[in-house]
Amino acid sequence: MNPRRRAGTSVLSGSPVLVGAVTVIVAMVAVFLSYNANEGLPFVPTYSLTANVPNANGLVRGNEVRMGGSRIGVVTEIKTDPQSNGDVAADLTLELDERIIPLPKDSTLIIRPRSALGLKYVEITKGTSKQGYAEGATIPLAASKVETKEIDDFFNMFDEPTRVGSRTNLETFGAGFAGRGESLNRLFAELGPAVEKLEPVMRNINSPRTAWGRFFPALEQAAAEVAPVAQTQADVWVALDTTFTAWASVSDSLQETISEGPPALETATRELPRQRPFLANSEELFRRFRPAFASLADAAPGMARAFEVGTPALRRSPGLNRRLTRTIATLEKFGDDPRVPSGLARITNTVKILQPTLAFLTPAQTRCNYGALFFRNIASMTSESDVVGSMLRINPLGLPLNPGSEGGPAAVPSNGPPASSIPGVDAFERTTYEDSYLHSNPYPNTAAPGQPAECEAGNEGYSPGVNGPGQVTIGNPGNSPSLITEKTVGKLSEGAGR
Image 1 (spheres, rainbow, N blue to C red):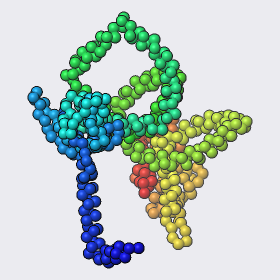
Image 2: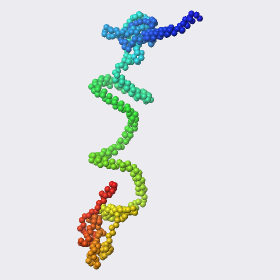
Image 3: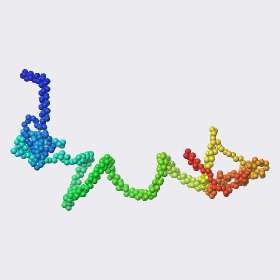
Image 4: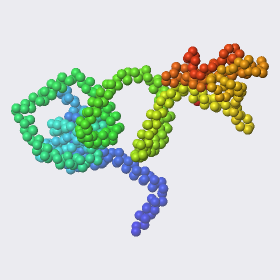
């Protein structure tokens, strides 16, 4: 190896300053080349032309120039070019590769989009002319093709509300078609017969007798007539949007309702005619209920109180119903017993026999209250007690045993014989003998059938013989006022309340 070369390499690798300088120079060259890459590589010969185009909208410096899909240059400058007719065109400075020199003069160019994001490029379609453009020549405006509508122009023709509505429609229809591929396949499969049947229909529509040519003018006239209410129509659609938005929240329920609709319709078709008599009877029933409904307002307070009182009873009614079920089952078993009819017949005869007695005794309680008074007095007799037990209160009445006395058997009512007719009776004993008059009536009136409406028992008056004749008549003397007994209803009610 050459010693000088080895020595020079050692010097370069051994000098950090020299290595750093070389690195900085290489980095600067790389940055310069990267910055100017859109305008072509430096120090590379190019073929410069100027192209006059009607509109350079969307083009920027550094956009590519392509031919047949291959990059052949870049746009280095864009200037405006006022025309004599008042329009404004654009001049593009194109730096092209030398391999296309010269560009045929019948070549055309057009500005095309490179992506949906708005990036564009200049596309040159090479002609076949033997004459070409010299360096620095201008491609005339006539070589530019008529401006075409790009996808961004299509979307830009809609305003923002229209774009929002279109996006909403796409999302809604997309959600509607999602998961329904099988149904759509069946639809497309059935479109064949539909199209075949549609052919004669379209033939009739296309016939001159149908006057199809006047259909669209008629639509135009109809649209012109509804134009004054266009705002109202728009409001309707806005309201419908609100309605359908609310329905969208319950779409599952609506779908279930729609799917269950046909069976429900079949059931209604079958059953509703059978319900006509019931509806007619219901109409008549409610017609007769009208007076009762009119009086409900007056009866409402009482009914409210009844419902309030009846609610606890209603809660206890299930238990009562269960017991009633057993009771009714027992009664049913009792009614099926063959011995019951004969027993009921005997009970019926017994009631018929007792009917006169019951009719005689009933007023003694219902009018004179004797039964309640009897049991009250029985309870009062044993109301006193001590540590040993209850005591029975008795007030004995000792009567003298003399002829005609109430104290023993007598052939006539006790009329109290005069003391003067009894030998050896002093003044003290005279009152005892004269008290021997009749104290009670064994056959008093009790308001029974055929008797005066009075309660004589327990209300007999007594006049001792000292002050005049006592009672000597058995039965109603005939001059007693209409008497009643003590009532115990209030006392029993208070007791029940306590």
